[in-house]
Length: 188
Image 1 (tube, rainbow, N blue to C red):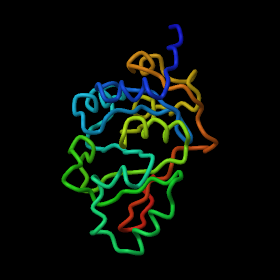
Image 2 (image 1 turned 135 degrees about the horizontal axis):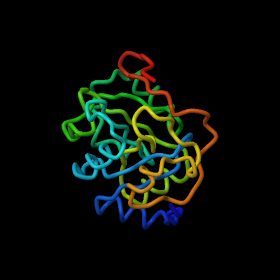
Image 3 (image 1 turned 60 degrees about the horizontal axis):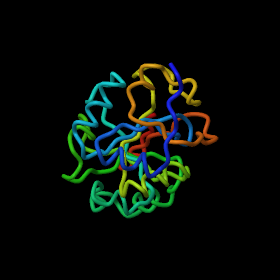
Image 4 (image 1 turned 120 degrees about the horizontal axis):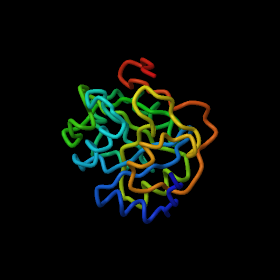
């Protein structure tokens, strides 16, 4: 299969707004992104990954403000809220209390929502151009290794995306840890 030509941030953002799935570099691995409020796009992404919808998905953003509609900060004690915010931007994914604005296809079987404010320039640029957070999940079939290089992406995943965002992954050796902000439990 010939390599898919990489697109610009603005083209990728337009594709997200139109219900597309975009492969994009993250802090550690290649990810798949879509509009979290677009159920059809999210379900297509889950099918591409062969991922159980009950597991839930991560939202990644360029700023804390982009996540405001999705997080019920009032449920989180002030000290824990401060710790979460102090960890961003950076490679820290947190499970936070979700608002009613978080659709079931994002939460899965959970009451909370997994979120991260990235420090990785391609993610920041894409979320900024898109105008909000996007779904970000590893660009692999569920259970398979996540690709650190675009060339390592499975052909079926590569063929199933609408675009590939130009850029490189960061220096993180593995995907971000996921922690529950209410309990401090490390889930991944």
